[in-house]
Image 1 (cartoon, one colour):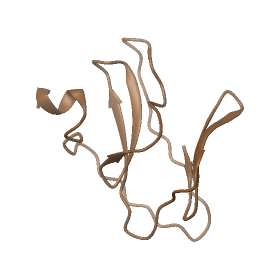
Image 2 (cartoon, rainbow, N blue to C red):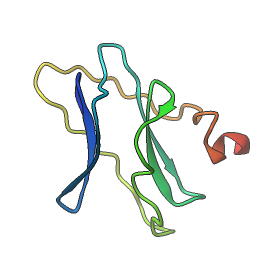
Image 3 (cartoon, helix red, strand yellow):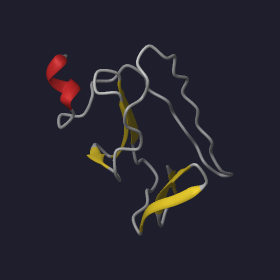
Image 4 (cartoon, rainbow, N blue to C red):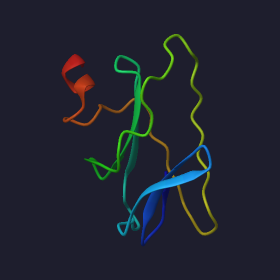
Length: 94
């Protein structure tokens, strides 16, 4: 997912999809939900689902590594192990 103050879109296999004119501002929270039960990866902005489910049918038993790329003049804080969003299937599993 690419997101800035004005817009966002998703890129996979060299293709841009689902562009929208909604971005983020200072203090926004971008969440990434890797659901190993459903084999999906989804994005959230301020607790609200953002865009389509980014990846489906992720292979079971694989190891996944988080990666973040940021642009200049950007500040990032990473929090791990927080409860999943209430609308996710895994929220009920906690």
